[in-house]
Length: 185
Image (cartoon, rainbow, N blue to C red; front, side, top):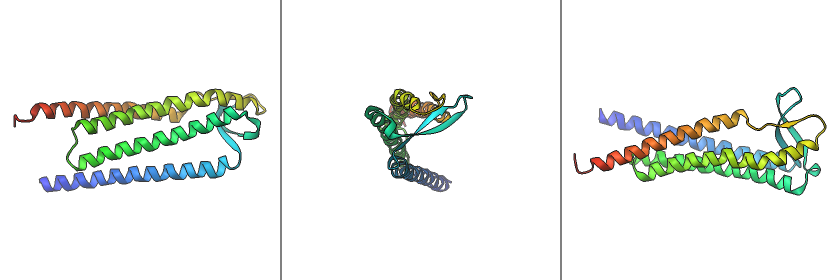
């Protein structure tokens, strides 16, 4: 019975690592596509609301932007990509630790906590960087466009951050309980 449980655990953990690797590959493809297609085409894609308050992606030529706005928008992209990669690495470390039998350890709890904080940084900092640059860029575009402050993606990341925070709390509490049990059994 224990062997079947261990085999199932290893299979499920392997599937998780595969899924994180696949997500990392998808992130890499997204980064390459963004840099080669949009950046080299000298346009920026902006999340905006049209006059009817419908979400749209607006492409603005980089020549129509001041230098600081373009740098800010590019920096927000790079920061979002880097934080997403960091979260994938930290969660992969948690799964690898679980495979080693180190589920309820301080290190695993710290990795999960760090991942949840990084998701929060990914939510806030790029959005704060993009907001003034997006408003300025949309003024360069004909029409009555408004910057879209909170997207559907933002809410998914928020729920993900809260879920990771809860998992980190469970791992930290499990680590404390395991430390309390050492020597008793």
